[in-house]
Length: 334
Length: 279
Image (cartoon, rainbow over all chains, first blue to last red; front, side, top):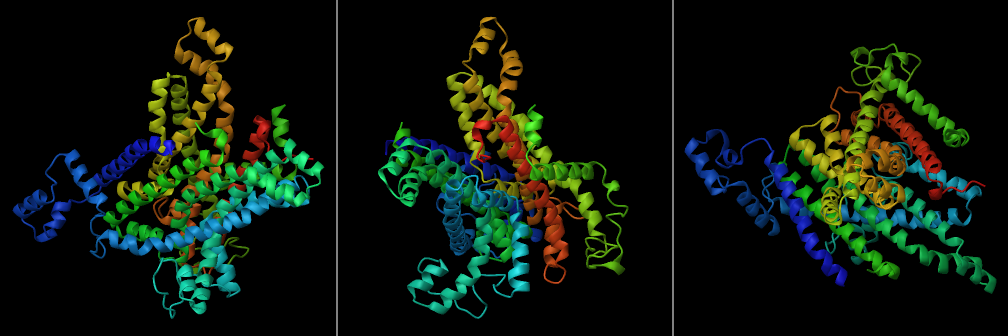
């Protein structure tokens, strides 16, 4: 608890610095907002000057920054240059899709990576390990945009097993919104058909996104388990006659869980970049696709808002992981 | 002696080294691998499947894809190496200074590196490139803005370990200047983890730059950078699958080679961190 309080002032400074960075980046943008606000080509110099005053653009830089911060904290990120709607509305609309994708990907990579890591550590040096360890190097070397496209080729084009785009089939209506996560909402609505459709659409993108984290989690789990498997207390347990599976799972894994959980948490942050790519490939309507579309359309308010929001999320995730560590490992508590 | 340990790893290491040598030569002298002009537009031959005449097929302008992949090695690889070099040089120098400086300065400067480390790389490279201008150069600079801090952190940790060693204390007692101590004594000793990280980072750099090109803010057409080629190939994916397959395969092979070699470098320079215990 004390640790959290210690971190808060630093966090605030960090977030302020980040928002300053976004603000300064936005200042480099081409175009004059006053010109656009005054109506563009028809505007007379008086109208432009009036708009400049109205928008507060004639004030010095640091005042403009304070305006920007005040707006941002209230959730006002300006209006999209593409559809004129407030950007915050679009962000609210799209972020559940990204959340669902990221959560599914982390779940897959943890559910597959941890057992694989444990297995390869337990059988270190033997055939299973010689299969899994180079396998994870293999997987971790693949560019996910390429892997995604190859997966579309195989599963959609060749095998016609899975859909290649979107969260639901065109003819299917989304379930009633409770969480925004289609799988959860379909479960809550007890709608098996929609659940199945949503799942079919989720599998491929989530699996592709999980690949990088999978390789990392497998490797860290293996390393952590290897460190622990030779500890004396395990030898004692074996001497007491505890079955090997219990030794591994109950004693070793539990002690290895700290670095494993740390890396899982950190991967969640790293996924942010991967989400952008995966959503682009599978036309998954989340924040990543929103950002890429904004880049294509030069919709700068949307892009700046996306940058600020994702950076804040990234910082918060890393902070949570940092705070989690002493909680799990009493030896580290300051 | 270390070199033998490095190379004596069996077929995978030799294969990796071979791939990298080929890639290196391809970067420096692409003409050796193909006689075709990667920019020669021949509309009659557009989107042809792989054949003897065109081993990788042709693109939508009739350009030979094998030639484009060959010539694409240069932008892809030099950009990645440049990115890591910049990050390494800036970061190591910064880390040296930060680590050697007093407690107060260390605290402040560490906060600065924390600031730079707080930015998710792809998101920020995307944003910077969109605002300032697209292209490989901008992406390299944008990514190095966050990357240098990783090297600074690593170098600083090493310096802190060595700072109180006898030979450093002896140098100071002799009255050596600080910058001399830094460059002549600390740097050579602290360098191995940095080297290990750099080797492994090159593969990550290739992947990130290719991803940014894939998203449209990195290499711009008609540059045959491999990630950019996959983007264009994506448009023709379902009917002309070879277009996206081969450049991506090239990325994969080179990245895999760097990863394998990077692991070997790490095993050779820092046996304590070996994760693959060979029986």
